[in-house]
Image (cartoon, rainbow, N blue to C red; front, side, top):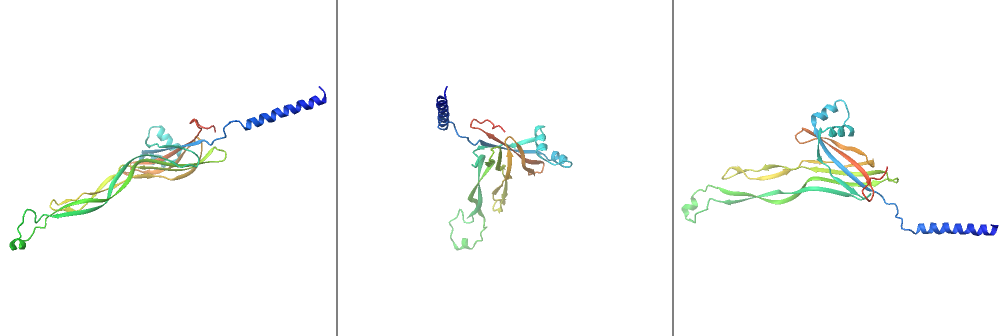
Length: 248
């Protein structure tokens, strides 16, 4: 092969390579897509005596909490889970709506004149007993959600391996109803005016976690009779479009 043929051959090879590169650039190869972020929060409760015993000698951290739970010492209160796109706030709600009165009006009816049409002067001068029939009527209403609510907003770092996430879990428990009232003639019984009191566990955390990691994000609060202690544990995972964990 002479020099002229060599130059032509090399030019053809370069042309083929450039054409292939141009074809690759115009192909339908999908662009890189950010993975979804899955966040699960487990609300756990433990006997207070277990927590007190450990606290005397050790710090309560995620290893202690998860060891207790794995050993069967704790109870799962709620475990809401949310999957969303990076930068997009999402929430899960599993609730029952309670509608309850917030104000009351007392209505009464005078019974002293009931059953008579006597308008004589003698009747007018007769002293009345002053007995009245009363009832309490609710006037205004409010709505409260009872159950588990989880709101999250994740942000990915540039390497798409670490997640900064705002986590807001909340558990609202069944209310206790307390009656208010006054002595109601003629029965001398309290008129019913009941208001609900809602026990609430609420947390707002802004943390950074790697995919697949678990963190203790809050806790140490006793329940409402002081026998249990609550803790919240979060797990974050990065998932591809098929729901498979993204490799670390």
